[in-house]
Amino acid sequence: MMQIAVFSDVHGNLPALEVVLNDIERRGIDQKFCLGDLVDFAPWGNEVIERIREENIPCLLGNHDERIAFDIPVIPLSKHSEEETNARFIAIGHSKKYITKENKSFLAGFPFHLKLNYKVGKKHWNIQLVHSSLESNDTYLYESEDDQVFIDLLNDSQADVVMMGHTHLSFKKIVEGKWAVNTGSVGRSKEENRLASYVILTLDKDKITPEIIQLEYPVEEAAQKIEASGIPNYYADFLRNEKTSVF
Image 1: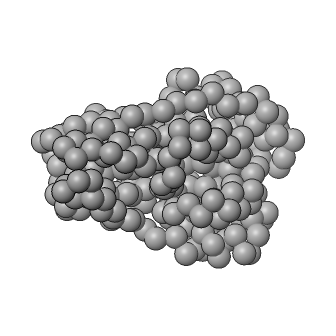
Image 2: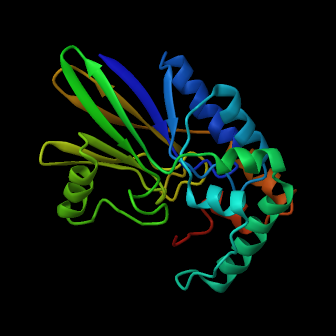
């Protein structure tokens, strides 16, 4: 048996990331992977990137990482309210201004997706890591999708399990004996409990078992730091579950 930990969507929230990394260390899990979106919406973008570098954690290129690394223009999304649209422009602008050139270069070097193969006994397990899909880092796949969506993704990647993030909503779903798993979000959960979320994947010689872990972290500390930064208070209210968001 072996275990790996997979997390996603930190979004500059260092207190949440520290809680997750400490929990992973406490459990004695050495293999860690991040599915992307280290930046935007909380004020610790540089510190989060540097923590990932310090831990040498392989990380994918999330859509927010890509925007900051390559200075991609922000495009308004019709599904967002005017309030969220304005807040989003300011928050992403804050990242573009304050994240260092060195850290932007680090983000630019992330792979788009990653395929893992682990051997347990005589069994080889194939694990596909994506931010949101094989073709895009900005596709929204929810638990409610038709099973065929995940079957196609598993078949295209020739994987036993596909791990994704991006939606900030965790789930695990078995389709035709294989797993589609969303890790949820470390630093900007859309779930009602707003807890920091990640997944432990246990690999045995005859099965794979995903477990969604959700942890409390100092939300109020993070919210107050947002309020003291140049990031709109919208995102502090969001962490306190006083605002909702459609991504």
